[in-house]
Amino acid sequence: MRRGTALLAAAMLVGCASTPARANPQDAFFEGLAARCGQAYADKLASDQEADAEMRGKAMVMHIRHCTADRIEIPFHIDGMAEDGGWDRSRTWIISRTATGLRLKHDHRHADGTSDDVTLYGGDTADAGSSARQTFPVDAESIAMFERTGRGVSTTNIWSVETTDAGFTYGLDREGRHFRVAFDYAKPVAPPPAPWGW
Image 1 (cartoon, rainbow, N blue to C red):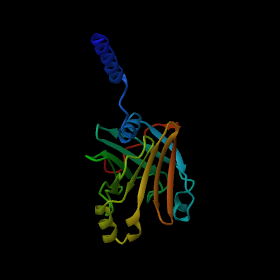
Image 2 (image 1 turned 180 degrees about the vertical axis):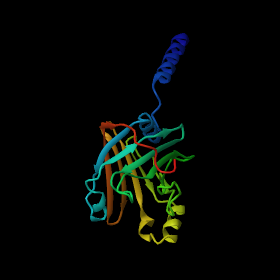
Image 3 (image 1 turned 120 degrees about the vertical axis):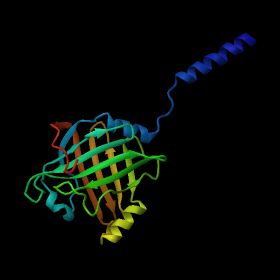
């Protein structure tokens, strides 16, 4: 009996060892996005507010350009929005790991490569989210920047990033403001030039 009990216990341990641990949703999200590193995708504005009228109908490309174990850089390009009427390459979304979750920052630069007065704003995740969607409430540093630069309306921003088998969506939400751009993973395109200043 003792030998049988020991064999049963050993078998149970083997079974446990072969069962994969439940994945951390943030790890799964980060790894799913990083798996597409180097790829670029085209699509368009997915929201329909008057504040975004200038972007409506413009060609857009997102490029999962550079990835490390702790950081993913995603330039966002918009045709016809630069001062010369060409591609605006001023925006890069940066998703990084922190000790407690994930962080989203927005790197904004001018065509000459210099940083915009309002740059590197964003926030950290406040919960585990899911393997498909993470949300980033505005952080204290960004609130201070927005207040200093007369953008007090942005102090309640919550950004979101979604990645599914179908595509990628970036969003911004606050009271009265809902912005979305969506990119179809079935529409890969050639990688665009580097964003300004990179």
